[in-house]
Image (tube, rainbow, N blue to C red; front, side, top):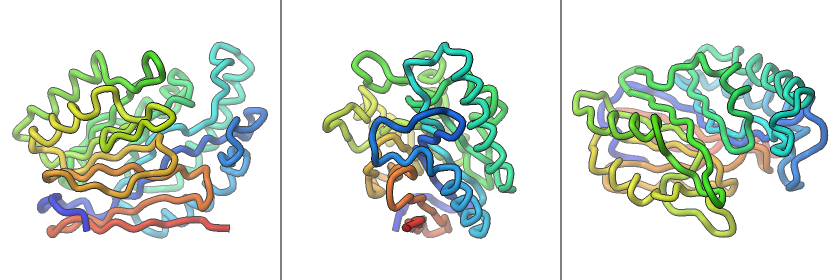
Length: 255
């Protein structure tokens, strides 16, 4: 059980991440376990399953595409990526619940904004304030929260009148997961301390670290890193919130 979510009214959150989808984009992911070309079919199956769960919110924490990062400026590649993003957007349109979607380090930020920039980055959903952050990697691929996103982070934590908050981002806030590659924010420990000290955040949702991290309850805040959907057994997680806390369950499309 994930405790500490108070008496908020949001009943069900579905959390999925790291599709690394390629359909119109040519080729496949550089890491073979990332089944990019199977994602259109599998994501469609997941959306059907998710719709049957009647969620109050769907959270998609980045790496929607497996965009060839050496072709960010290539016009033809951008056109192919638009078709793939349209595929994802059309599938998401089948859901009637609100969406919180962020980009990851394998997405094209400008193209992401074309398709998902209309989604509110700060919204109220059934008693919770859902705050989405669009962050990037810095030197050495270390994730950073800077500029306007850092200012928003500071401001929402200082809002004592805020409903209980849910923070959404691609990268890992806590616990630290930097073995082999920097998955956690460069100042992740400081971010964790600020979140806890603020007293308004109840749930922190991340992707990026493909193995995932079991929900960690830390001084009133639950930090969650969902495993990558693009890898077997193609998981997504569900959080059922109630007055007594949150029940977490894993759903998979095992084949």
